[in-house]
Length: 383
Image (cartoon, rainbow, N blue to C red; front, side, top):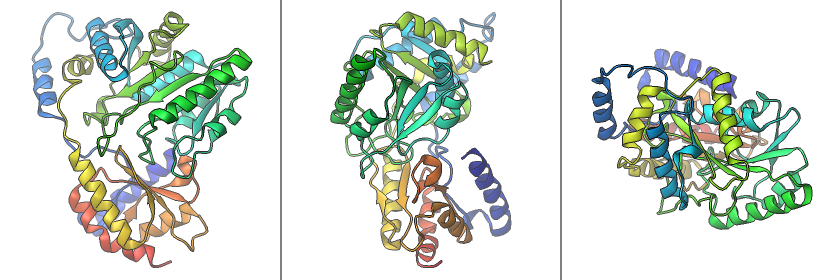
């Protein structure tokens, strides 16, 4: 998948140079198109003027204490339980958070279960630390199939990852989904003596449609960990700022937090970027308008409807997971290559564990979406 994205980027650059920026329709990458809220820019300017002694020096590896407390306040609101700063470890984005966590909890040969479809780089994050990613089927609407997850659990299972809203499907796992998942995790723990961690990857948590929300996990499962960042909700992907939050009532809370802090050091991150720690501590609850993403979703689905391309209805994030049209034998790689002939760049579903599907990232300009209509129609009606 990493090589694919690199190829997509090279293809985009060469195509735009050859055909012009307005003739290439790049839906390949989840790079937020909305600008950060004005409050973010104001705080950046404020922090940039700070010339106090040692303002750019080292801080504790887990992050500034006041920043950890601010993130704990955020999680207290989202999870509905009291969280304190000693449960938080600041990280280099959600990816850095996941790698630090897996370094802390995985032994060689351990397994991590994930429902299909899933963010492709999970494979590498798990493998980095001697683990194996086990893929569990989801239901046809991409909601959790807890029976399939239960069947995937073994004595080697260290964790289960959920990503809600999901990249690439946009699915939000319901409160009932989470309750069912927790029930099988408890059943497995009672049987084996090993309770898998429930790892919740939540960078898209705030980007939801139709009044939906992401169900909290801390109140229902003590062996749970939140990983998140400000890449998507505040449109700050390049600043690499996020955090790990361990459930305050996790039985090995103190040991797990300490292990994540140590992993942050030895993986070479040392600490999360200090400048943006100070920024997000002041803007984590900035008012954001995601209605443009919902509007672009409706525009994109209207285009797909006209082209006769079916898709999973998203409930959040900024992706559409689409079925490869009939006649392609579920060959998503071949269809994505075909789309390139029409100057459309998308990601094949095989990289997300879902053969026969492809992903559209509609976090692009409205003009790009609207201009792509004839290209999608032509691609869907040719071979």
